[in-house]
Structures are given as structure tokens and as C-alpha cells.
Length: 263
Ligand code: F6R
Image (cartoon, rainbow, N blue to C red; front, side):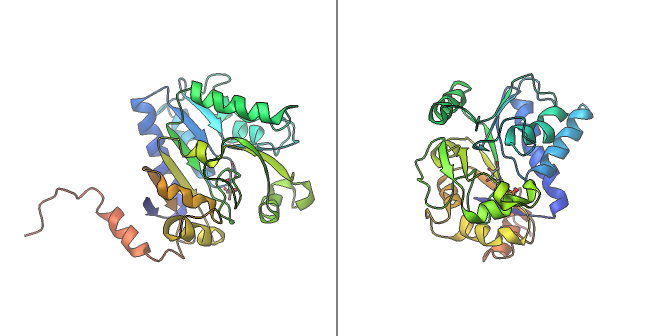
């Protein structure tokens, strides 16, 4: 796993560079789109670059990760609304190019199965953007999630509901108890994964993700088994990494392989 420790202000352009490079080589690429606060700098930077004509999403497609059960898609806190506001409406995706899970479907199991089929029909996710919860969840795969899981209904932990109450006017009771989420097995099929973590509240989850034992207790640890993951974190989120100096050193010399040794 590549670990990049940087200033929060640099995260947007670092990750946008990856996406811009992907779309330059594969304009029809499929993006996996996280919601929540972690990717906001990236989406701001993508909107800016699109407005400046530096990149285009005209042929790209996208899939969001998860959705609350019971919120209609127009609800201000639904992830459909969030991704539309934070990214889709600010770049040049074709209409309907970004799909989101339907948390108010009459048959949630069928909606989840159909979502899996949609990802497969699109050729799979080329680059998945992830955040991580303070309890180690990725998408809404809470502790105890099967590493083989596919898109399905899950129950949010009390901690996740408390953490996300800030999006619901501070009202924990307003945060739905259930969600639909891509599974860990689904996420692991993305060809490339970029996970963003910002702030000291994520430090413990980040430590386990990179340096802990792979365990259902910290679901994000499954990413240790993925061949191409980049973790982009600020200093606070990196504060519990035991090998932080080594990761900084690796990053500083990332382009130096093959250089002649200094005389
Ligand atoms: C959101 C998602 C979640 C968030 C995580 C961190 O689509 O999948 O896993 O990435 O809860 O949330 P923030 O970024 O708001 O701290």
C-alpha cells in the first residue's frame, strides 16, 4: 500500500491528478465515487479543472458507494443528492452517467443485485475513491462485515450514526439506522483504489488499515490484500502510523528507482 502523508490543502490536486491522468488515457473510465467530507477537496479540484477546460468527464461513468435506507433520492442528505451537488452538477458527465444506489427501492435486495450487475456491465470500476469511518468502515461495511460481501443492506453502528449526525443538523435520531452499500468483495474488484483520510479522528482507523492485522474488526484492513491502493492522508490522520517516516521517505524517493547512486 502506498501511503502519502501531505498537507490537507494538497490532497485535492494530488488525487485529481490521478483521475485526470486516468481519463486522459481512458476517457470512458468508470469511477467509484465516495460521498461524505473526505473527497470534497478532490471534487472541488475536479470541478475547477473541468471549468478551465483541463479535463472532461463527458465519456466517463460513475457509481456511488452507498445510500441510506428510507431517504428518498431528493432528500438533501441522500448520497444521490450529495454526489449530484458536490460533483455531478459541477462537471460534464453525460446525463445518467453516474448511478447511485436506491435506498427507497421497494425491493432492496433486488436493487442491490441490479447495482452489482450494472457495475459488471460497465466493465468494473477503474478507480475507486474511498473515505474511512472512525470505526474503520469503508463504504458502509461496518465491523464484522464479510470480506466476501457484495452490495446489500447493512445496519449502521451507533458510532457511525453519531459521526454522521453532523449532516443531519446534529440530530443522531435523524440518521437512518440502515443503509445499502457495496460490499467489501465488490470494492476489492476495483482496479485501483485511492483512500482519503483527514483529521485526527481517523488516526486509529488509518493505523489499523495500514499496519494492523487484517480483521473484520477493522473492515478497511481488507485493502492490504488489494494490489493497487494509495492512501492519501493529512498529518493528523497519519499521527498514529508507526512507520510514518518510512512512508515519507518512500514518497520522497518514489521516482528515484534506477537513478545512479550519488558519487
Ligand atoms: C461515504 C462512505 C463512507 C465515508 C466515511 C467517512 O460514501 O462510503 O465510508 O467515506 O464514513 O466519511 P467522511 O468522509 O464524511 O469522514
